[in-house]
Length: 134
Image (cartoon, rainbow, N blue to C red; front, side, top):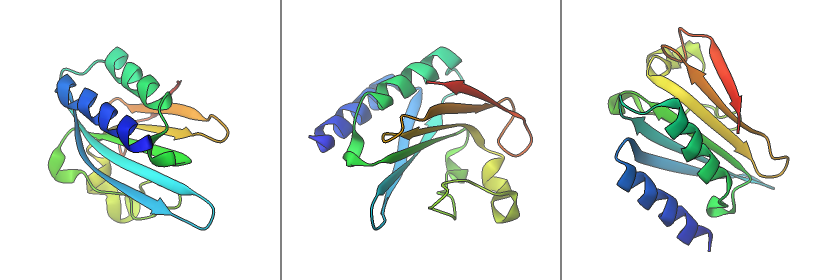
Protein backbone atom coordinates (compact mmCIF):
# COMPACT_ATOMS: atom_id res chain seq x y z
CA UNK A 1 0.00 0.00 0.00
CA UNK A 2 2.79 2.44 0.90
CA UNK A 3 4.40 1.88 -2.51
CA UNK A 4 1.13 2.73 -4.26
CA UNK A 5 0.85 5.97 -2.29
CA UNK A 6 4.47 6.77 -3.02
CA UNK A 7 3.88 6.21 -6.74
CA UNK A 8 0.75 8.38 -6.61
CA UNK A 9 2.67 11.22 -5.00
CA UNK A 10 5.51 10.92 -7.51
CA UNK A 11 2.95 10.95 -10.33
CA UNK A 12 1.44 14.14 -8.89
CA UNK A 13 4.90 15.68 -8.79
CA UNK A 14 5.60 14.62 -12.35
CA UNK A 15 2.33 16.17 -13.53
CA UNK A 16 3.02 19.36 -11.57
CA UNK A 17 6.27 20.00 -13.49
CA UNK A 18 7.15 22.77 -11.03
CA UNK A 19 8.44 20.37 -8.39
CA UNK A 20 10.64 17.68 -9.90
CA UNK A 21 11.48 14.53 -7.95
CA UNK A 22 15.22 13.82 -8.18
CA UNK A 23 16.11 10.93 -5.88
CA UNK A 24 15.47 9.33 -2.53
CA UNK A 25 17.33 7.50 0.18
CA UNK A 26 15.75 5.26 2.77
CA UNK A 27 17.76 4.56 5.92
CA UNK A 28 16.69 1.76 8.23
CA UNK A 29 17.97 1.81 11.77
CA UNK A 30 17.28 -0.64 14.60
CA UNK A 31 13.82 0.66 15.43
CA UNK A 32 12.94 3.17 12.71
CA UNK A 33 13.01 3.96 9.02
CA UNK A 34 13.84 7.42 7.70
CA UNK A 35 13.22 8.69 4.21
CA UNK A 36 14.99 11.61 2.53
CA UNK A 37 13.80 12.80 -0.86
CA UNK A 38 15.41 15.49 -2.98
CA UNK A 39 13.45 17.76 -5.32
CA UNK A 40 14.17 20.51 -7.81
CA UNK A 41 11.99 23.63 -7.57
CA UNK A 42 11.01 25.52 -10.69
CA UNK A 43 11.52 29.29 -10.38
CA UNK A 44 7.77 29.79 -10.63
CA UNK A 45 6.77 27.70 -7.58
CA UNK A 46 5.04 29.90 -5.04
CA UNK A 47 4.64 29.40 -1.30
CA UNK A 48 1.05 28.17 -1.59
CA UNK A 49 2.03 25.41 -4.02
CA UNK A 50 4.86 24.27 -1.77
CA UNK A 51 2.63 24.25 1.32
CA UNK A 52 -0.04 22.28 -0.58
CA UNK A 53 2.59 19.77 -1.72
CA UNK A 54 3.75 19.27 1.90
CA UNK A 55 0.17 18.86 3.13
CA UNK A 56 -0.38 16.13 0.56
CA UNK A 57 2.81 14.39 1.67
CA UNK A 58 1.70 14.55 5.29
CA UNK A 59 -1.52 12.71 4.46
CA UNK A 60 0.35 9.75 2.98
CA UNK A 61 2.42 7.05 4.68
CA UNK A 62 5.31 6.69 2.31
CA UNK A 63 7.33 3.49 2.76
CA UNK A 64 5.93 3.22 6.28
CA UNK A 65 8.80 5.48 7.28
CA UNK A 66 8.66 7.22 10.61
CA UNK A 67 10.59 10.34 9.63
CA UNK A 68 10.39 12.09 6.26
CA UNK A 69 12.68 14.84 5.01
CA UNK A 70 12.08 16.57 1.70
CA UNK A 71 14.81 18.93 0.53
CA UNK A 72 14.03 21.40 -2.26
CA UNK A 73 16.91 22.69 -4.41
CA UNK A 74 17.19 25.46 -6.99
CA UNK A 75 19.90 23.63 -8.96
CA UNK A 76 19.87 19.91 -9.71
CA UNK A 77 23.67 19.75 -9.88
CA UNK A 78 23.92 20.45 -6.14
CA UNK A 79 21.18 18.08 -4.98
CA UNK A 80 23.04 15.83 -2.55
CA UNK A 81 21.94 13.92 0.51
CA UNK A 82 23.15 15.21 3.88
CA UNK A 83 26.32 13.58 5.16
CA UNK A 84 24.73 12.84 8.53
CA UNK A 85 21.70 10.60 7.94
CA UNK A 86 20.69 10.53 11.60
CA UNK A 87 19.96 14.26 11.85
CA UNK A 88 19.19 14.69 8.13
CA UNK A 89 20.70 18.14 8.45
CA UNK A 90 23.32 19.88 6.39
CA UNK A 91 26.27 21.70 7.96
CA UNK A 92 28.45 24.52 6.62
CA UNK A 93 31.49 22.36 7.37
CA UNK A 94 31.87 20.46 4.10
CA UNK A 95 28.36 21.04 2.75
CA UNK A 96 28.31 24.81 2.23
CA UNK A 97 28.10 24.61 -1.58
CA UNK A 98 25.10 22.29 -1.30
CA UNK A 99 23.47 24.58 1.29
CA UNK A 100 23.74 27.52 -1.13
CA UNK A 101 21.18 25.76 -3.33
CA UNK A 102 18.65 24.64 -0.70
CA UNK A 103 15.49 26.75 -0.86
CA UNK A 104 13.29 24.80 1.54
CA UNK A 105 13.20 21.72 3.78
CA UNK A 106 10.07 19.88 4.90
CA UNK A 107 10.30 17.54 7.89
CA UNK A 108 7.53 15.27 9.06
CA UNK A 109 7.58 12.80 11.94
CA UNK A 110 4.63 10.40 11.78
CA UNK A 111 4.98 9.37 15.42
CA UNK A 112 4.66 12.77 17.09
CA UNK A 113 3.10 14.59 14.10
CA UNK A 114 5.90 17.19 13.97
CA UNK A 115 5.43 18.84 10.60
CA UNK A 116 7.36 21.97 9.56
CA UNK A 117 8.36 23.59 6.33
CA UNK A 118 11.54 25.66 6.61
CA UNK A 119 11.89 28.31 3.92
CA UNK A 120 14.97 30.31 3.01
CA UNK A 121 14.74 33.66 1.25
CA UNK A 122 18.10 33.26 -0.49
CA UNK A 123 19.40 29.82 0.58
CA UNK A 124 20.03 27.60 3.61
CA UNK A 125 23.55 28.93 4.15
CA UNK A 126 23.04 32.68 3.86
CA UNK A 127 19.45 33.30 4.98
CA UNK A 128 17.45 33.15 8.16
CA UNK A 129 14.82 30.48 8.03
CA UNK A 130 11.11 31.01 8.19
CA UNK A 131 9.14 28.06 9.57
CA UNK A 132 5.59 27.19 8.71
CA UNK A 133 3.66 24.52 10.60
CA UNK A 134 1.92 22.16 8.22
